[in-house]
Amino acid sequence: MRGLILKDLYALRSFWKQFVFIYLFIACAFLTSAMESGSVSFVLTSMMIYSVVFGSTVLLSSMSIDEAVSFNRYALTTPLGIKKIVKAKFVLLLLSIAVGVFVSLLICGALSLLPAFKGEMIEWSEIIAAMALFLIGDSFMIAVMFKKGVEKARYIYIIIMFALAVFVFGCAKICEMKGISFRILDQLPDVFLSFFAAAVAALSMLMSYFVTLRIVRNKEW
Amino acid sequence: MDGENAIIVRNLVKHYEGFTLNNISFEMPRGSVVGFVGENGAGKSTTIKAILGLIPVDSGEVELLGHRMKQDEYKEAWKEEIGVVFDECNFPLSLKVKNIGTIMKNIYHTWDQRKFKNYLTRFSLPPEKKIKELSKGMKMKVSIAVALSHDSKLLILDEATGGLDPVVRNEILDIFREFIEDAEHTVFLSSHITSDIEKIADYVILIHNGKLVFKENKDELLYHYGIVRCTREQAQLIPESIILGKEEGRFETSVLIKDKELLTERNFVESAKEKGGVMPVIDKAGIEDILLYIVKGKGEKQL
Image (cartoon, rainbow over all chains, first blue to last red; front, side, top):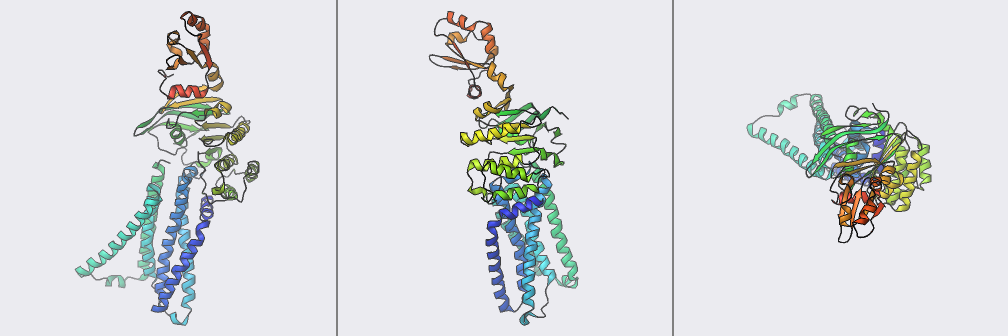
């Protein structure tokens, strides 16, 4: 699998400058709004979410490169096997997200040292829940990417994210109309909410992995 | 497990809308070069994909180097012994040639980096160049260098020489010749360039419309097969059992036969002369002739 990750890193070399530029641009935009609102929590949440989106972008680009030269068809004739080929894509996604999270923490850590932001509480459970939601979107996308190709996966990813947003917003609206209070959530410990969100995301990834394995096994390469 | 054969294909069936790979069976002895010929769309690539497990098949069995594809699907280590080259270079275009060595070192346990570097030098492939900067021939050479730089005992090439100029093709055929100097090494070469097959193959497998037409020893094929050029009346003297294809023109009839000796034994030329008309001629039939007669639908019979 190391060979596949290396291949992706080499192949994406020409994209790294773009990725860094976009990342810095987004960071600057969030920082400006942080300066105005005086909240570092907002910047951190936005950057963490962007880290997941960044992971998806890296993954889509790598799959697009593979697709252009039918790399997976070749890879399946090597000793790698289906599992490693699929696993490598999940690892690439998680690695890219980890890099994004690390950079976000670094920037926001430095920011929180400034007197203007000192003492602000970070809502970790909200951050983790938001990231989990985007990860669920990614897990759908990976399976679609292997089944239908990158181009369709891009559109489906947008549709999934939009559907998730509508679902969350819709649920909140319905609860509000029916007079169902969210106070119960406030009473739950933050750790529980974070753990629950992370578990749902992990489960979604796991399911996506097995579905993708099945897709790859039955696909005509 | 069959130690004699590098590839065994039994009753392979794969249905598509408008095309069926129909009950393909053949064996390929170790230490040989097998040319797999057929027109575009005959089923060559589908057969190769089925052999390599790249498409699910409806029925049939495949054994590669003694490993059953279905049973050993998850034990991938034996694939160290197989080198595959498709009709296009499958490495991302932004990779540098030298990167491929680093990547493959982490994919094949038996990867030989020194061998790879030697091939790069031999093929004049600049390690610092990106794949996208290479010509089609050079890209193909990169794929071949990769296929040969691990412990390959079986090379499977799907139209690997297609689209290359004769000089590069000849160079690549020389490499395959070197490869099979080791009696354990086997080459399965699919191509519609029949001259390549004629130059290098020990056996020829012909596929047409998803059906296996024949698998023959190449030398025997070229020795026994022939084209009889005669008149329509003279052609009637040729035994039906040896006719593979016929082309009837206004002045001449050409008949592809599978046994030239039988005609000699039966004094065909003398008997034909008695029928009048021009003197019949029995020409040698090349693989291309055989392919053309069978593919163009002139063949009224099949083996």
